[in-house]
Length: 240
Image (cartoon, rainbow, N blue to C red; front, top):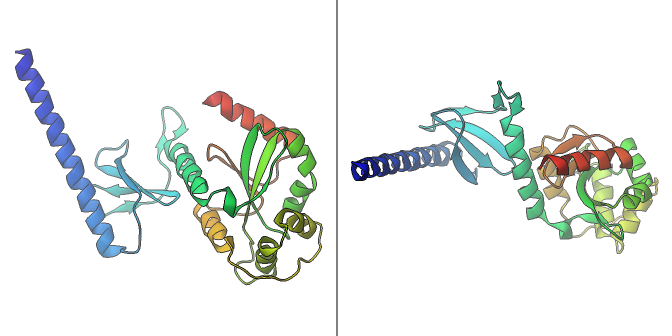
């Protein structure tokens, strides 16, 4: 009897896997026809039957099992009062930042690094300048700051050109600090990641600058003083 039950269970499991693969194929086919330029990173069943979680870059969408309908928004567990989508977005953001890599960021690192954050910055943004003017305080707290550019005025703007010039400077860190103090960087062009930074900021739904992203992928829009940022990072560690 136990053997029969085990075989039946395995059969049902096999059917479930087959159905899941069929649904995934249907979703991929639907995307390839309607949005061929979109690269799907992963497809997973969501918490709602018949609805799949589709990861595209740093974003998560929900798609019906036949691929006909797409929902954009956050899935909330009402009973637990938990934003299920935000938790998963943290993971996609973390992977996206790792994919960019430190070699495409301007990094300020303390002697002893305890924490690491990525900051989307605009050279001409007032609160971005305030954050950078207090860099010694962040360093004293052991916070490594990885800068990515997000000139809010867009590509071709004065802020954008400054970002490119800073990146192309012989000493990027010194050039960024000088620019944050209001000095105009020497105009230069070279291969640079500014457009890539801006695209990633848009995927992260940046509304302004500075935008702080923790090592776990959580977003904190706006300026946070060093002590307050440490509290945030410690709470994040404790919640793991």
